[in-house]
Length: 158
Image (tube, rainbow, N blue to C red; front, side, top):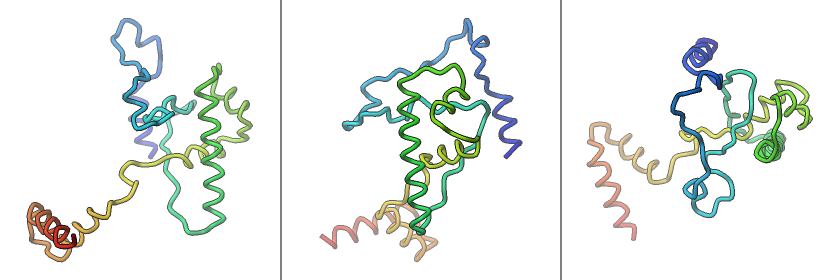
């Protein structure tokens, strides 16, 4: 992953001086970010601060109750810290971490990992699973034919 981080750091900059005179896109909280009765921005703005580029990998699913409890406590801590970031101004990331009683960089990464959800990993719907089963049984079938077969099975089930 170090090569990925180097590429990101090469292509992107957070230097405000480089943005002077350029047209920039700023995040603004509009009504579309609060759809369906949400009270928080659906893009999870503001983002948590960091002194360096990081790639955050989510926790693996676990059945261990102690591990689930630990991850849930970290997720709650993330929510508290996110509320603090949203309502306060800090001069540095270190000041923010000190204010939130985060003891180490490792602890901070664990907190960030607890709330991370990769959109691709949210799970597969039951319909998608059914479609996958049809495609596994008939690997040569076209996707559209598999969809028709799934639709037919659904109609017959009603």
